[in-house]
Image 1: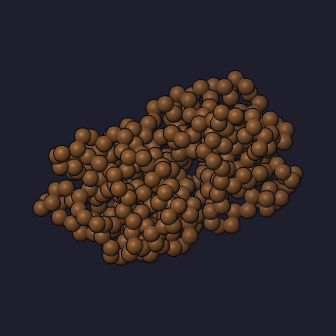
Image 2 (image 1 turned 90 degrees about the horizontal axis):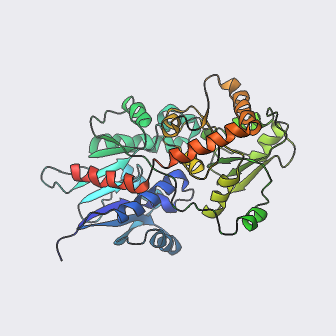
Image 3 (image 1 turned 90 degrees about the vertical axis):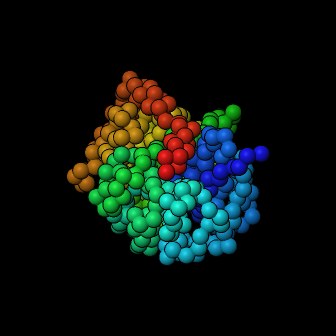
Length: 382
């Protein structure tokens, strides 16, 4: 057997306490990298010290992974070690980090052309909206971005919007590559949709929001908008784990003067449940104040939900006019504009159907295998 070249992928976010969109990204991209590996290449994973069920989960999600390297350091210690340039990966060769959690240190690509590292910067929120993150998170991201500026051979960003915003805060020269994501391959409506709908107590008509409950997602604005919607008392369901920043859905609903039960936080849901939620939603609303890509928008498109989203630059790029756009400028008037967009979709069946068709077409443009092939090409170019 000939010599095998290995690409080692940092897959830690898959088993993070709140995996979020980046966890989904790490999982889908790594699976696609395994599927599209050129002849003579293999993919290995790297993860912080984790409980055994987490290792088993990674093995189950990523069949075909040649090996899983397990750090001696737990996630928090590993991120601190890498922030200060300690702790290298075992061996040498190509490393692909699916976030800024990366072993960025000095290496000589001229003497060792195979020794290379690419990192992913998903958004510029730490610079543009630092108040929507924890202070510790902002400090860590900025420190790691500085290390990337110094040591990364390539920096992957999900949209041209992020590339442009990043250029204003970091000098990365010509090392930036735009490689987006796609709707998750694991989102499929269950075989027994009615039984699942009954278990979730899904109403006949509902609005859906998806995302970690944190300030940046704009859910407080959406809940305020709900009080202004004129089309009956259509409830809002929110799927996603609790994040940080004490976003209390029931309290926000009470403050907006909404009847009890009008807003329901479903917490974390399974892939099948999420697919069903998208497929039956009267509208999917993504009011986010800042995004790097906005994966839920593509997921909603793929599953046929009419989409209403903010005009955050990355969302405009991903959606390409396939959703109903609500401008963020003039923050005080944002809830009223959201309410008006919701009324437009709820009150006009033709417009709603048009958005469903546009969304499905747009989702089909993106694929994880295409993204993975671009990553392989990126490493070949290095």
